[in-house]
Length: 193
Image (cartoon, rainbow, N blue to C red; front, side, top):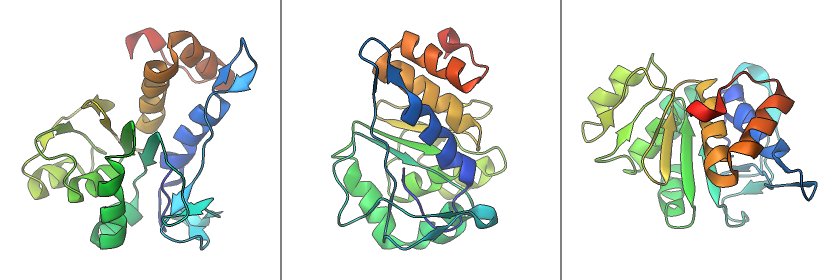
């Protein structure tokens, strides 16, 4: 989970919860090691004042199979201008099996050029801006998420949880995704995602 100041809390906390509690019940073990990464290991101040200590900085982080890029004011107004962060995201496309954005995290993927020629979505309040500022993207409206084979974008805030269950189903199977949703008491039809 990528973190930065003014990150939307549910954008990273929702997916964090989905992946951190996903279990292989046959072997009674967690399926994922979920970590946070930021440009530095300095304390992050998320939206509305929540403070988070990142596990890694860009220079000490291990290889990630899945990278979740949340949104929020920090993504769309601050970090979009941070060349170090945008370049770090661009470089991860070669290392990660999946890069997924939540909400306006799509702007960071767009700024890195990773959505050029692809379908993508974002929060409904920002979809016109995404279409206007990044004309090479085929913007999709009124969808929870879009999968472009290794790069997934999702709509705003809670849509990141739906996207996470879709990704969990893709990586670990329908049974594990359904069991995780039940454990979270999250009402989703796993068959339809």
